[in-house]
Amino acid sequence: MPHRLRSAVSAALTALACLLLPFGALSAWAAYGLADTGRYVTTMAPLAENPYVQDAIADNLGAGITHAIDVGPFDAGANHFVQDAVHSFTRTEAFRSAWDTANRATHEAVLDALRSDDPNRRRPYGSYGGEGAVTIDLAPVTAQVKRQLTDDHVPLASHIPVAHTEVAVLPAQDLVPLRKGFLVLEVAGFWLPVTAGVLAVTGIALAVRRRRAITATALGTALGGALLGVALAIVRRLTLADLPPGVSAPAAGAVYDALTATLRTVSWLLLALGLAVALGMWVTDRYGRAGRLRRASATPAPVQVPEPTRVRA
Image (cartoon, rainbow, N blue to C red; front, top):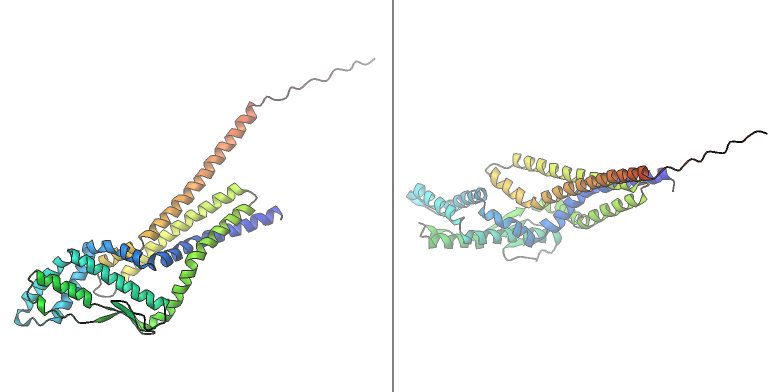
């Protein structure tokens, strides 16, 4: 293959590999991070101790409890007691257990909907009814709250109803497009990173000047990591700016940051790795040139022997 053609093909493969790399990181994060219930619950668990999340849940839970019970003429005082009790409850081990239970139930119900069309598949707290909405049952969580408030002798806590209330977390009309997108992500989560790696190695192997190709690949990797980090920041800002009324922005930001922590780490790693490799190639090239110059200057020049002068007869 001519050198010019090899250089063109190498540059094209390198550019394509660097373009696919951030998308591969994103799809792998979605397929192997968000789609794993254990990892999801572990990621969300520390949020049970986040004050913004605790306050948001306490406000909504307290409003729901006071709405569900008949407080009669003691409405203002009962609301105050219930709100204080619920805020105290969010600082307990029972709340952290309820938080993990609710997150696990929600995640498993959503995964069931995305991976299966079987209407008979059910989870202990969440369910998916074929093409219907994905729902979770709040009764186990409500029972834990009622038990804790009763033990704390909160007024009217024994009157909190523990009904099997199914709350929709994923509307039925969103299932078909989400299911297709999820299946694509599961495939892309493996093949996109592999394809990016194969293209990068092939581009370097075909390059006429491999050192330059490695440097270009490293810089492209760093650029991809930087763009991924910028994209995460932009999406975070847009998400928080478009929240429904009544949703706590600090709490939503904490949830977003927890879910994307791994992806942000990957973006920094790509940036650092790419810059480190590019810098290493530049340093070794400079030292290599300096070494060649020193060896060339240290080599004695060949002695010029003068030709004998011919004497004319």
